[in-house]
Image (cartoon, rainbow, N blue to C red; front, side, top):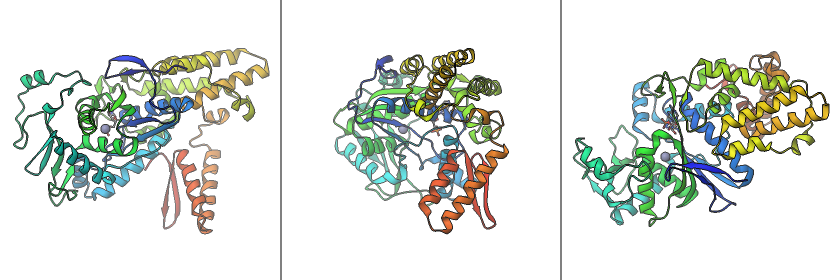
Amino acid sequence: MKLTLHDTMSGKKLEFQPLNAEKVTMYLCGPTVYNYAHIGNARPAVVFDLLARLLRQQYKLLFVRNITDVDDKINAAAIESGQSIGEITKKFIKAYNIDMAALGVGAPDIEPKATEHIAEMILMIRDLLKKGYAYEQDGHVLFEVSTYEDYGLLSKRNLTEMKLGSRIEIASYKKSAHDFVLWKPSTPDFPGWDSPWGRGRPGWHLECSAMIEKHLGDTIDIHAGGQDLVFPHHENEIAQSTCAHQGKVFSRYWLHNGFLSIDNTKMSKSLGNVSLVRDLLKDYSGEVIRLALLTAHYRQPLEWSEETLIGAKKMLDRIYGSLRDIEVSTKKLNATKVPSPVMSALLNDLNTPMAISEVFNLAKELNKTTDQNQKEAIAAEILIAGRILGLFESDANEWFQNKNTSIQFKQEIESLIVQRDLARSNKDFIKADQIRDKLFAKGVTIEDTPSGVRWHYGSN
Ligand code: AMP
Ligand code: ZN
């Protein structure tokens, strides 16, 4: 099974060959937690969750997706809302994880927070200073871009041309406009940590370099993120890590997803043209939203509209329609492999539109056949393909009963809440947490209030 992936650095589709099949390492730049996730933010989470599922078929994977919980945008959100920075980040980390779980995104193996890696960041800055790649000025420490000759290789930018073209006013503490912040001073009202350069906070790019070094090592197999991160974020991560690690390759494959747009404009918090995942979940199941995201190839732009969701809902209706009333035994399921046309499509740089169309071919075959054994075999193939795509995990009969609000669904949730209460009153907190996780996986948020437990579908 040959996996090919499009690598931004070489601009080519390459065969994926890990450094060590027993420990494939992948890092995805995670959210900056100051707002609810919009559907554009969900695209990398879903796409690279699919890649993680695919890699886990063949390799042992260590997948890290970080949380950026120190950032100027978070500080601004705290001032605007009157909440503390800790309250803001806690609230939006929880909301992000609930929303992503509802879209079938598995938790990463490690989810490091930037604020818990300040010591590692300070060490990396000291090292870069010692080696002559950085300089200190007015409480700031900056990476001196001209000291790294391969700067610009990922984003295909030429530093000399950039210099000639740039008319940006240079901040007083910078030698060159392209130098970027590793550390900057903090005023008493902002988060800050003591450092050799005074009380301050890290630059965003440095956060990822330090967390990668700590959890995955100097050279990783795959680094992923949205296309907007190629420059400057990933270019700067490469400069820092490569210079800190004696020129060792930082990431062997670079993967970037294309933009999700609305009316041909990139969806973005700053433009305000966002559709929040938590709002979409009020009208569509997580599975519909996930399929809608996967209908386009991850590198292509995806124009988002109500039609995208309606189309995905119809597709799932067709698949569940063909699976209805067919019993697939666990034994059969366990003995079934991902059908090779689906697998080949996914192995070809995650060609999800092709993989989904192959699932439709199976559904057509299933509708035609009258032989019960054959029906069970094809249904098993669809379900197994679904495990890797993160789809078709609902009960086919329940699907048509509007599961989210169906009486059975409500009863199931209420019963789990009663069991959790019981576990808590028996001081069996492990079991209580397991039940809470089960509710979480079903997209349900619970709230412990003085008058008892309240729940609702979707994130808080
Ligand atoms: P942020 O929280 O803004 O740092 O973004 C988190 C992730 O979402 C990053 O990988 C971004 O590249 C990605 N992202 C943000 N907006 C979009 C969009 N409109 N389409 C696709 N990916 C996006
Ligand atoms: Zn990053």
